[in-house]
Image (cartoon, rainbow, N blue to C red):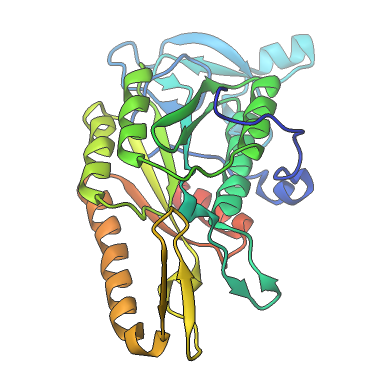
Length: 306
């Protein structure tokens, strides 16, 4: 976990709050590859319906697939697994650029930063994925691929990922496109890539060229576009000093003079992120940091299960 500062786990993991999502599962929308230990369609052809293994039952799964003979004999609930099923291996890629430190103001004062929102969301998602005995991994994207934790499913692995997520710090210089390209060079099997970023980069085309590498290898890619509402519009007031979070310097101006142009350009930029994501065959979701992360995750899981 080079590049990530290890800390005590717990800040971003609220098991009591996550209990409301116990009935939900992270589902794939495309066929994937993996070992036979999950509930997702496999890309492997042939042998459909052939029994290969047992796996312990997880609450909420289809009871029709229980092996009742094993239950009667051992008192433990197991599912029968077949060759057309596979586990999910999901890599959570988090943008650690300086712009992710931005935090706007809500009704109760200053909101958490975009990075903190991503940390809560990624921690919760890693819990949901590993709880259903699938695999979660982590990639930290900054100047390049700062750190990579391959997917795993054990409780110890999940705890390690959650500690790593808690220790993420932003970097002053970032290159999201290079980080994704380096990650692509590290992974072998197909899986699901979830990218959490504000996508405030100089060259969007270059970033999505890297994303398309995963899509060409038949990965499922989910784009979670994090936006703070205060980024969509400039504040009211006569004069402000705006300071860049990635060493861009500072600008003194009156928001009223540029408000219309700023909002128009921000909307166009955000629209470009969505357009490029969909054109690459990604699952795109706008994520407002004003919406509680559990609400965002719950809606996301429900939507993918339909």
